[in-house]
Length: 194
Image (cartoon, rainbow, N blue to C red; front, side):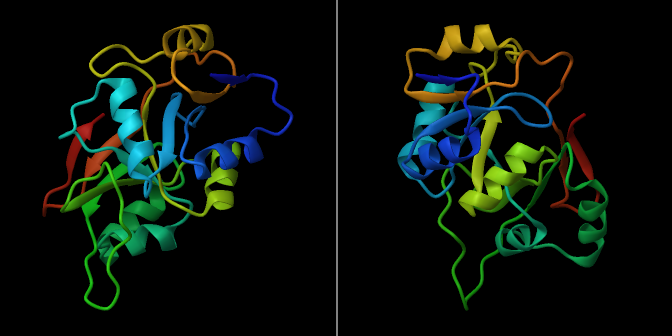
């Protein structure tokens, strides 16, 4: 494990690690998250393995901007208004995946075949990372699936030190909660996680 608590260049280090197919543990505007290139099958599989997460549970995806979100998901005018009110921010929206005859959708791993959970975060270092990599990143909270989320950086390094992951620290998180998840795939808006 490369623990970069006081890394002078966490942005470039993280981008390089991800583009080489690595998994990073990174602070977000909510909780610490596992991040990996959504188009790298091995990296995505590694997150599932580390978390002991069931393969049938899709991962959410960070995108750098609304343009990328529209490339990946079907977004109508009504949905666009909702998204633009909440993004960037602590809201993950489940949308229908976009499939077009003109250009096939990006090959993404760890996501559902018909829907995709997207979020544009509001955290400068993470937003800069998304811009630098210019790819969607799968993301999920740092914990073993089904157990409590880890907020203390020492607990994170202790539990995941046996894996070859890059840890970028922003100290201990206090009472941060994961993002709210809202499903916009049906006529009625459904709150999946408050």
